[in-house]
Image 1 (cartoon, helix red, strand yellow):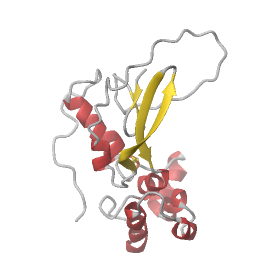
Image 2 (cartoon, rainbow, N blue to C red):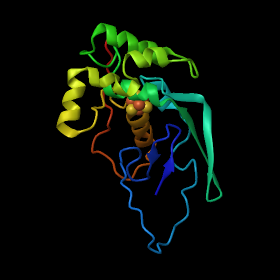
Image 3 (cartoon, rainbow, N blue to C red):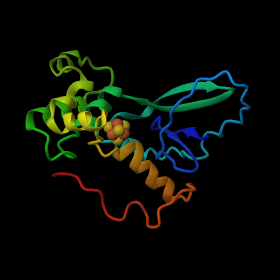
Image 4 (tube, rainbow, N blue to C red):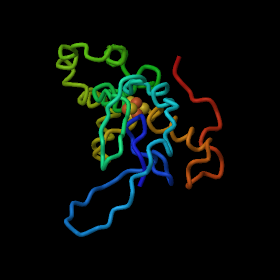
Length: 187
Ligand code: SF4
């Protein structure tokens, strides 16, 4: 169906990263088809790393697994950084972030891998709970039972999608390019 990109997001030739999956567990005798050759879509441009406002995707450290004899690799992913920034944004991506909470999130983003975070995260109820301290996050949970993507998925989705679109690798295309102006950031 596709391949795992450096961002750890699954990419398909039809939609790139713009796709979500549900799973059905079955013992039906289904026929498998070959795995997509790694590198068919993801050329390791690492624009996902550059544009992720959480700094959640490592440029250099990776995770490697072998599936059905095929070696797969993606960038080491920091779930805590993503969880906080996905839900609440950063001072650069959310105009509604209170200064104190914005500083905490920025501190988390700036922390190197492996640094002890428990004191900060315990204070805030964990990175996964950071966003729920904000009314706009609570509204998202209450209306569609999922956090809003306040980070704008700038790295793992948009940067990746734009790159694949520019390369003409995707079957499903918009009539006009997805990106027509410079992405904004708060000063
Ligand atoms: S969802 Fe947002 S914070 Fe998480 S990896 Fe993607 S761009 Fe980064």
